[in-house]
Image 1 (spheres, rainbow, N blue to C red):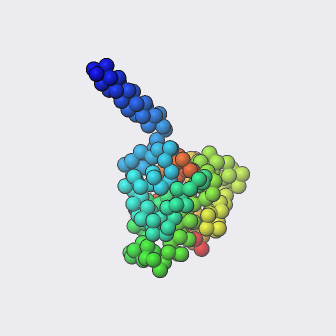
Image 2: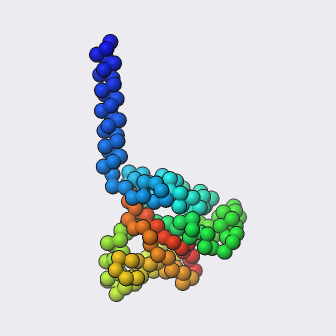
Image 3: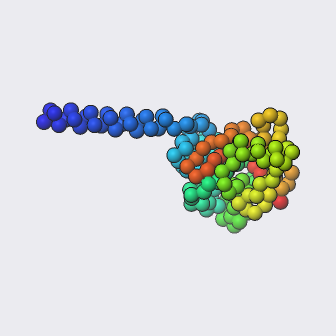
Length: 187
């Protein structure tokens, strides 16, 4: 009986050590006070970021959770809570109302590009385009990327607003997230 208990304890320790080692071996990025794991999808990681609670609520209100948990790959330019706070007072509360779901969906899908574009990929596009390049968003409208000094890329939306990328290449199971400081608006 003692041998059985020792074996069970040893097996349990080995399994928990192996699980911890697997989690620690993943290259993670801290976003909103939480580690973002490459083995999780975009929604699973975003749920843990304290800086993206408004984005998560908007994604839920627009019914886009299943889409962003899909296979992808996707590149998501993820505005922070502070980015949403820069919008005129009441804008977010109005957008999450059921009757505004189409508008909210249009805005959110404007932050998503099909395919995985890491910083190095964006830099290649910028070099090819002499400092600017156009990306087609999931909502069908263009979004422009621009150089703003070495290793600093900005996004320009259809209304002329400019967003800075503050955190690049947050790896996800189904793509990559870049954290931005401004909500992008389609034309």
